[in-house]
Image (cartoon, rainbow, N blue to C red; front, side):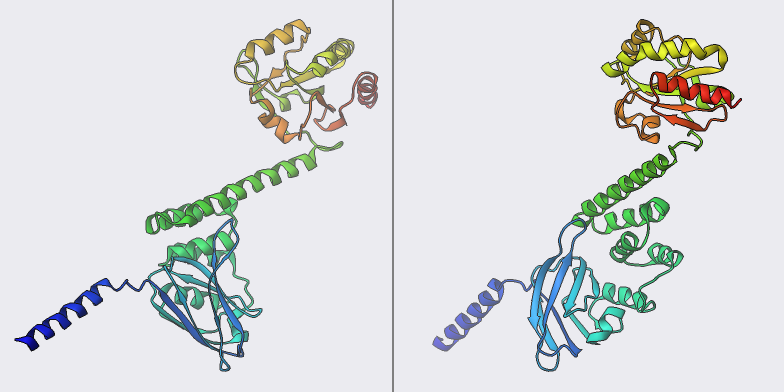
Length: 356
């Protein structure tokens, strides 16, 4: 009976010890890398729009063998740093035992063998086809659209494709990724990158447009409504000498300049000169805008605005950073002078008229 009791107690202690042992949530990353003897090897987590974070490190032995443990392994993009070599690895987060075998110089061209990770294998297999790192854009799009790993697809899209010219591909892979990894911090990071790309594209478009705003170039067209809702197009005024005047009712320098502008208009209006006024007033200031037109005696008909203040579309196109800002156009719609005022404006109009 005594022996039975001892045996029972031993079994209970063993069961309790087994039940109380914490689960092993770690992942082992190991390998043999020829030429990496005695080097320190790092595994870095890559996060969009943030610095990389080192999550594990190990010392390779004299044969280039190493082993590292990663606790609470997360799905994502990683870099294996071995000296100057930094190949990218993609993991689902479910891996338990990953092993890589390669020559140290082959890592950067993805010529290695890796086991224990489906995602890492998919990425390595694709990248190894392009040892020079240059992948044709159509092949990237096809890979992103067809790969079984949305993690790899997202990474390839955001590192190899331009957002502004591949929107359908980005929309599709982003939706897949959000479904597969709804709580991933990568979602916010990728969204930030998309917004950054959109802003950069917008800024580039503004720079490209501004580069065309110079004497001798055709003036970009404008089509906006007047206070009564009638749309006036700048291009409809070809054949006349036109002064584009960016102004606003709230702009004191503009209002001070208006009497001189009225004098010039009255002097040349019968000779084919007119003014196309673009107001930078905003929503809710329509009456203030129309009151200023009447009070300053701006009698020409071409008063337009999208009521978007400094976000005015034509102001963006013409690179307007301050008002008043004017552009004098010849009869062909080309820019003849930028910001002429007073006697300089009259002289510029005379030059156009004298050319016939």
